[in-house]
Image 1 (cartoon, rainbow, N blue to C red):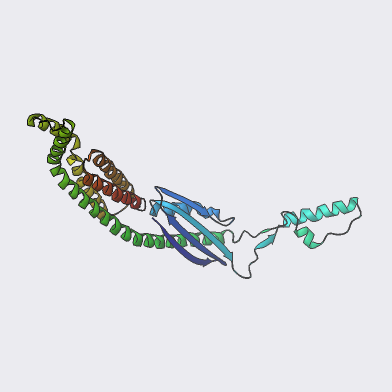
Image 2 (tube, rainbow, N blue to C red):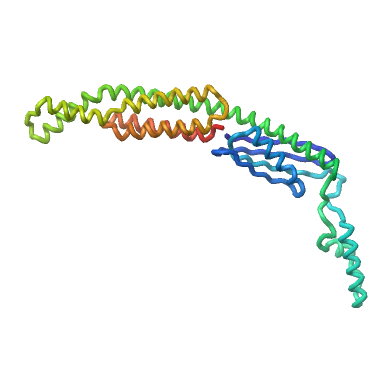
Length: 288
């Protein structure tokens, strides 16, 4: 199920933002993008999401900004001391000018990103960030619930359509044996140039064709699948996988119905069934 949530927060001189985007997926897949040094919060964040979401591709982006007045860089004293010592060694070997402060600060490792708060402050920041993630997940779930209500209405409408088409197919199936007999009689008459066909022979052939074309079992199973799908929708909770499985069963029965159908109208009903079932399968991919 799709959804988006954004939460801002501030702690120990840092402002942070969580952005969470969820798109459809068969299982639960998490992707994180965090600032350098804050990947330490990822295990806790993953655990929170796994506890509250069961399905979807979830992308989480954490951004952190240092509050005004707090330096984003610091001097590595050990690296600076080593750099100055190296300069003095070089000057003792050759005659050269003293390097500028800018040149020394430009040496690798002398000036480095400020890792931010440490020890107790870092723990406070981590706790605040993870707490805000919980709020973001709550907001995301609310968005997904709204989408779920729309999906429920859409799938219910499609089930009504499948039920109506199943009833129409059943009406045709009940009239099919007589239609098969009449069609067989007509075709055989044409083949034999108008010769008479014994009624008992015609009845045997018509019965054999009727057995092959009997779709009542498929219609009974379709009706059972419709009821099972409606029960799933009423039950609530994570039903996406089971609904997807039911949609596959729907499709199997519709394929068999189309293969057995003789009349054009029954074939049309079968194709309409397949189209409605395909839409159910598409919607099932969006359900958690």
